[in-house]
Length: 153
Length: 153
DNA sequence: AAATATACTACTATATTAGTAGGAATTAAA
DNA sequence: TTTAATTCCTACTAATATAGTAGTATATTT
Image 1 (cartoon, rainbow over the protein chains, first blue to last red):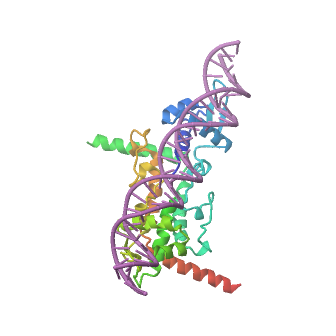
Image 2: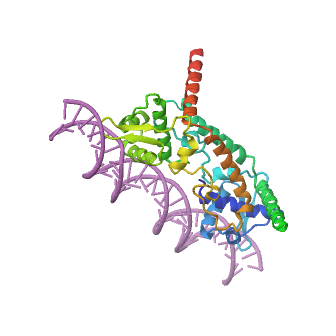
Image 3: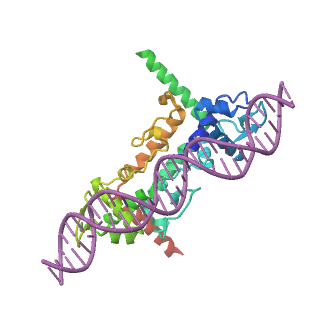
């Protein structure tokens, strides 16, 4: 499971992506309210995202956060990794949280690891081709679909 | 990430599957040593697996645990679910650990959820078609491969 | 100078996971 | 029938990670 921190980070970045045209900073308090994220917690998260170079900030009374890259350049896999959410199901197949199984003398011949590796690759394949923009696009498509269904009733 | 409990359960079941022909019970202490699992912890895990109907047990001095189903009938996805390891990356797409996002008024139109759903489906597709027997088969294939590589040197 | 924002450090509270202790019940064999 | 070896079961404990908060410093605009 992803951490809440990771989920909040994605939601916050999506909020910035939705108004990306203007590229003016959005306040933490605004993001927090829009996305129902605890304000102080979001503060810490945004700071971390800035340190990782995903967002920029402006201090002072007209300050806030903004995306540094374009929404189509920010990949879900990247956000998940940066915020500490491991994608792999076992440490022995994780790139960022690697740890060997003490009981595996040679992990190259572990059948379980082999399967879990396959799962990881399938997951990463999806997550690394999906950008913030893609997610917004899905949002639109889904809401159109449900609207169409409603009018049919 | 899967819990250690889940990993241990899979390893223990694999140990039973490797000697399935004989179908005679294997002692917890033997499994624990073979797979480097803390003995007392494994005891609790095997008990749980029995309650879920994956293994049977025999008490007394010649006792131990044995598989109730054939190794090709026990699917990885099943073991993971029974031992409490969620497969989905977010609770809102989990079958067994479902919880709605408080901030999503209508989760049907959540773009993030939509992607994570896709990841879950890709993972489950692999895990639910992979049995204990399949894993043993991979083991053999992998160890042959590495042996072949060694003799080439 | 006042108001309002982020930056940053240092906590705390809670939940989950991992693992242990100790003894009861069962079985087989001496 | 006693003994030894096993599973069964309840109830703990310890360690760790996550989620979230408090308080203050620093920067910016008006």
